[in-house]
Length: 126
Image 1 (tube, rainbow, N blue to C red):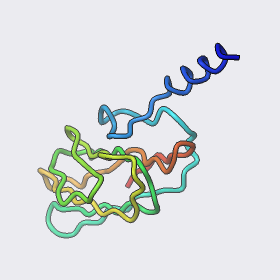
Image 2 (image 1 turned 90 degrees about the vertical axis):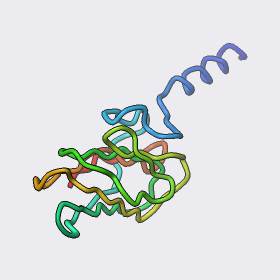
Image 3 (image 1 turned 180 degrees about the vertical axis):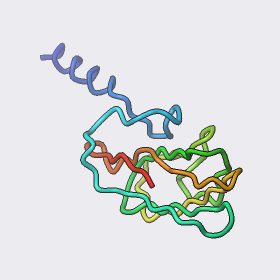
Image 4 (image 1 turned 135 degrees about the vertical axis):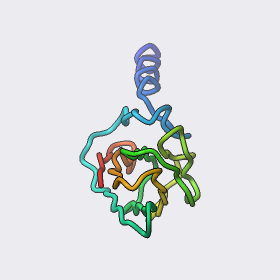
């Protein structure tokens, strides 16, 4: 029975799980299925500045912009990772508002993943 238990522990630990944020801006969740209900909404709040609202509760996030710029006013539990933002811990977050300032007048598209829990994530875009 012990070898079977060790095998189960090895398999579970081999699944990609990023409690301190995604390792890259192009990473997708390595667990669960893409049947999450989370979404994002982006609105221009003046000039080249956009506010992205994340709906619902979630534990992890990777969010990219289609244009260069700077992420600002990050809520607790969110950090920059190169050109994207990701989570800095695996605690539950909800109703986050993230600000992005584009380097140009081109309207950015935002895309990425929101991990709601270990079993469910959503691919998001706005």
